[in-house]
Length: 199
Ligand SMILES: Cc1cc2nc3c(=O)[nH]c(=O)nc-3n(C[C@H](O)[C@H](O)[C@H](O)COP(=O)(O)O)c2cc1C
Image (cartoon, rainbow, N blue to C red):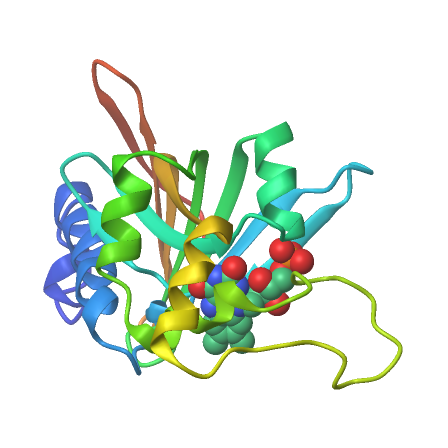
């Protein structure tokens, strides 16, 4: 390895630690590019479906990511039918792309859902009280109701779910002027299979 590469490229463990650290920091850093990853699900017609979400939590030890969504949304129904999910992160300043594959669990009426709702800002809660639900076709652009006050926002709990994702595989790509580097990690119950790959 050439000497002028960043320290986090020293070995496969340092690469993974750096990637996970970037995700951890992005949860609180609202303007960080990794705060709003793209999640992809498998549509009912078998086509891939992608959209931006806000990253709400990441626990590196358990490799669990969390985002929030409306139970009336397409993605919620898609994940109920098939929990396979991909998450794409890219930070241009870091020159790092992280491609995650995992499986999702839906938390509508359990403790995880309650805690996630409890930690949500009033502003965020308002979206879940919209009527009709997201994706509903309307005749005019304004034909939906979005509550304005906090009391009404609490009604959104009925439509709110937390989605947790256990990371099964991570593909790390660093695009540097000194040459690109790529590492792939497969997380098995007993061990992690880590390999360098041709970028
Ligand atoms: C910056 C940004 C953040 C978003 N965050 C979320 C989110 O956290 N959860 C969510 O369900 N949708 C979020 N959305 C909206 C989704 O991208 C998507 O348009 C919507 O959820 C409908 O997707 P679906 O029909 O595939 O379910 C966000 C969109 C943007 C642009």
